[in-house]
Length: 489
Image (cartoon, rainbow, N blue to C red; front, side):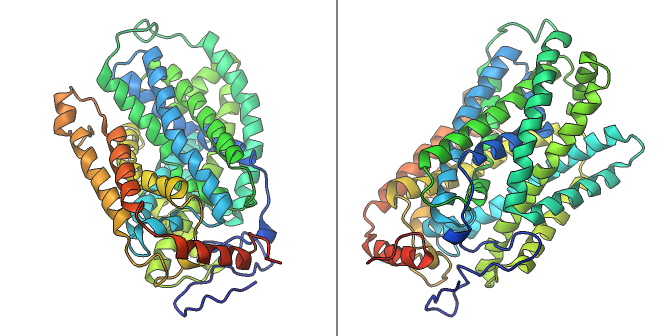
């Protein structure tokens, strides 16, 4: 299938799939004939993506800040409930538009203006993969003590690359089976841990409520799933365009929320009694406390669950990398470009992981906090545009044109993003910077609602006066060309 774009500088929007190993498509549009899958697949995908060993580390934050286990779990649950809303809403975009998540930023920010959020998300994918690869390598090293950490890191990266090269269907397949295996193994583990792990008196009970650490845990937990927002359309874009928006949202929210809550809560519980221990050591110790050898079984599954997560980071990271590269010089979609993007993310993340100290939990929480700050204005502008301004109607072919209707720069999105981020600064509280409002409030961080309100309202107000009639006309014509709408009689 081919489409005439009427412009020599436009990249291919639809390319013909070729037989061979691994996914063929990259940043191009997914034709209707290749759409498949069910909305519930998003549930198993995102459950497995969050129900993995590195998620345990998030549970340590509140305990080390002095929160009791009860208040820590309340903050985690509220943070996840809030942050998962954003990523779940993005799930609908993939099925509706059939293109990767970050290339969808061009209508709001412009063809070149979208480089800002796209560059931030590349750092996101690299950062997540550094931490996930380190955790996986530690698990592998615990299973094979004589193995060096460098060798373990490289093995984990290579295994992740193989699944990522297989692509969309491979990731979904492994995550689906990983979900069922996790439910069996970790149900036994979690129930057993309740009876075998003994909490210190300071961690049990309601304890004293402290607003500052409570908000720190809230923002980190919100950032954990909000950090997945740039991934979501990448892994829902093969769904049929008529897939129910409610089903996409529900299954994504349920899977990501439950997977994250289960493992973060488990991490809080296990690490409350030994805050200096690593997630790997507490898993093995608690598992062996249930019955001999169960800790090793749990670690094996935990290691296997991390490999598709590493693959997921490589997969979406490669799409974001190709989107940036496509902005600078037109990228031809296909296996060659996919290979280049995957190698870039895999090699760079592994190189950083080789230099990072294994005791990195503090760095991980700081990374999640900073990530949330940068993502809040982007996700707000993107979702307001999709749900309240354009109502999901985009001229897909024009998104790939530097000189198309979405232009080089879109000041509305850029100004709303910048204003939202600047408005957040006085309210931020991180290890490297504390805003004046946060300082006056005793360290309490209220930056998230501020960023959402400012960027969302500004973008909505700026966009209300725009005439979208020409864009809608082009969109209707393109829907017929792309095969996502019936051809008029």
